[in-house]
Image (cartoon, rainbow, N blue to C red; front, side, top):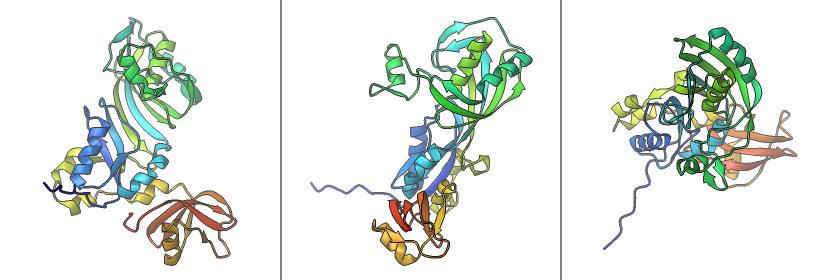
Length: 308
């Protein structure tokens, strides 16, 4: 019996900034987008829990090479904390481990928030993807093992109280750096206030360099199933993920050399002589990410001509 080759999918590249719905895991969401686009390759820049909604940047094709740059970007979350109970997962999914009848007033909450801005030490939740001895922390926790994670520094750029719904629930918004766990923020505030707390709602609204205007709901994409031109119109260019890197313009001949893995000499009065990380473009084509040493561009990651 002859074997049939599996279809590779379309060589489509760029970013789809998915508005992930409640109850769907990140892996499932990426698989759905990949299927809709018939894409050869897909990945995402930052996991969202099933109980979280909002921005899940999905990279298609050549954009997967730029995922680390989005992963490192600042993020914005809007979340609700329900006081009176701490759970083993620090959100609604878990079971209660501590309870309290105490409820903080708005003045007390605002005073406590001052401890959670700037560079702070934070212990990630036991139910997280942090690796401990080669195993994911959440797997160890589910197996009933004691999970001990070392505190780590995280950056909180902005932390605001947006709404006090009632004595039980407050809504916050936070701009934070890579590795920050909002669930841990809620847990630690609850402990400091003596009332305990857990995240009861969580929505990610921004992942640098993307913002809310870029969001596309999954059901909107699903309505376009089979219309690849319409779906492709929702794709953002691969290079958007690299906006914070310096850019150098090169010729078509130089682009060919870079795509073959060869260095090129940057010429011109304003040519960069040294740089740790630079993007090379030829016209509107993204060509490579690399470093510049003594006026030579050395490619580290190259992009095909089809990259958006």
